[in-house]
Structures are given as structure tokens and as C-alpha cells.
Image (cartoon, rainbow, N blue to C red):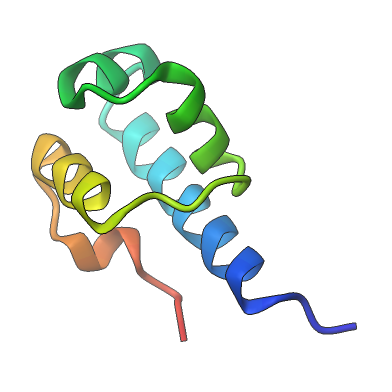
Length: 76
């Protein structure tokens, strides 16, 4: 059974975000506070349950000092 592309995209971005954040030793609460997004929203995004806006993705990539494409890695 093929997954909905929206779900797949959300899960891929969430997995990338979680991995990169942890590799950089940044707590979920620290990321949420730094970019003024609720802890719950970031946690849900990492779990693939919500879709982050382009503005949120840009803010995250800037805070993590990564290219936006790293969050989108493996999307097709």
C-alpha cells in the first residue's frame, strides 16, 4: 500500500529534523524557544504529524546553521 505523499513528506522532514537536531546536541525545548515555535509543534513535526510552514523550516535551518535542503533530504 502506498503512503500518502503528504504523510511521507512530513515523516521524512520530521526524521531529518530530529536527526540533525540530536547530532548537534540541541534539545527540542531549546530549538522551540530559539525560533518561537511551541515545543509541542516541533515534537509533532519530528513525529511527522504536522507540516511545518516554509517560514518555520527556514527559521529552523538558520538556527541549526544548515542548508534548508538538508531538512528536505530524501524527498522526491
